[in-house]
Image 1 (cartoon, rainbow, N blue to C red):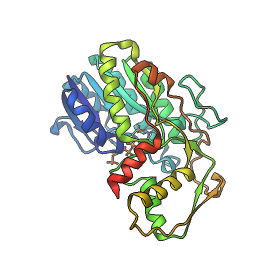
Image 2: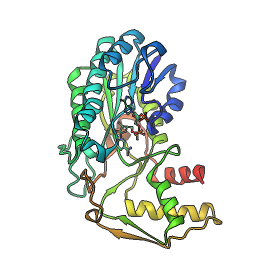
Image 3: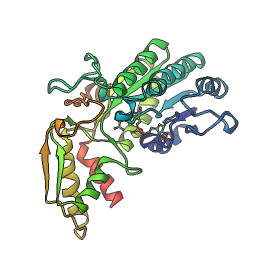
Image 4: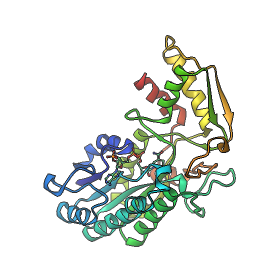
Length: 299
Ligand code: NDP
């Protein structure tokens, strides 16, 4: 089996390089990869993407590349649309032409964040931001292409590699006596490792049975707020590394309105993962499990 991976150096892309490797031949590209290197990985180069898929004729295409800078997207609408909507549409058309399965990632930000119930895959979307809107358009283009596909909507992604919220809290906790973190957005921090592992399992099962194609919510179990997440990070760090000098004794709760940002974020980012669990027979670990593991690796 041949697997083409785009966005190999992102949080999820990096973990996919590990989890997809046992499936067969893996061609992993980033935005600097060119046709001369064996494949174009730049999502802005739409002809390059078409040519890459036509030449490589992969069995599976996994697209982990995206415009993920949520606030910057508000002033980079065209670029966000190209990366999050047009390019996934081009990949889907190209996948359809060669009979490949396309795997793509989307986000809780396609929802408006109203209510308190976890969102199911069929709930009406209502993005609040350019990022959410363009990611939704990407989903729609893939669905319209006729390509066999898996779309995983996930939330609050972190990874041991690169910067993330937990690492920022660790740093600030050592620098400041008091942290202030919002406590009215609810969701589940989800590890890139978990996303990559679920992706590999799902690909194997979907290649055996096309009926599994579709959109799935993929998030760790349980829920918290950014404030609860920050508290957990500091408490866990103290337990894992008692000699760490943590100045912060308190993580004060504030509403989202205390930190105005260019992009609006949903208050309710809870994702219902029943469909994923039932279709693939997988059970999602609690969010604290993965965050603790990431901290143990980082500290
Ligand atoms: P990252 O921001 O870590 O990775 C995105 C990757 O896209 C980066 O490697 C980046 O490359 C690459 N990229 C940007 N522009 C281009 C381009 N023009 N051509 C090719 N590659 C490009 O994102 P995640 O791994 O966290 O996200 C993976 C998926 O999950 C995305 O679809 C995202 O929308 C979705 N998601 C993410 C969430 C999160 O909290 N992060 C939450 C919900 C969904 P470079 O490093 O060179 O800039």
